[in-house]
Length: 153
Image 1 (tube, helix red, strand yellow):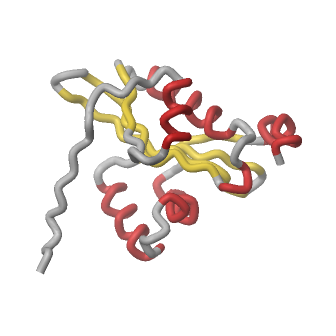
Image 2: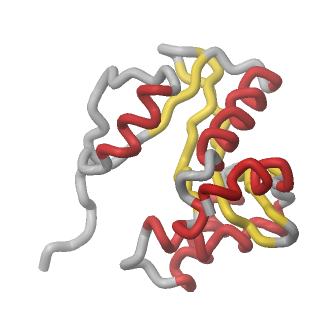
Image 3: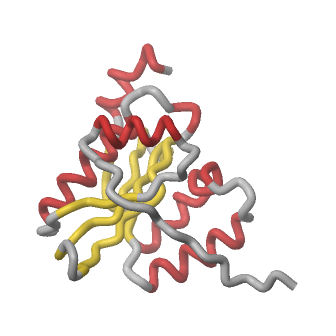
């Protein structure tokens, strides 16, 4: 696949998905969340869509091979920003530059939308993602704290 990456990238199209197209991302989202069923992911997607979730997707032919979720928000500390949520490339296509192309597309979109910064989260154990994002100019500037509100009884 990597040997064919030049041809793959030239045939690839990245675009913002329409709301009714969003379910196409669920199989890739499950790659990153293997312990969550497709039904649960579909319900979460429906909830997220109601809160203005967007997603850019990379396609070759009609096959979705990569996704990058998008939240446009404004906060006191930074103004308008784009939060990149769940950048996922189909494991069969990793190493072909698709993640880079997705991030470049999302950054251009952030500029067009008047964002001042982009932010994202990466699991602390996902060292390849840390290296990828740092190569792309991202800096670790804080900690993302999580407290479970699920009943322990």
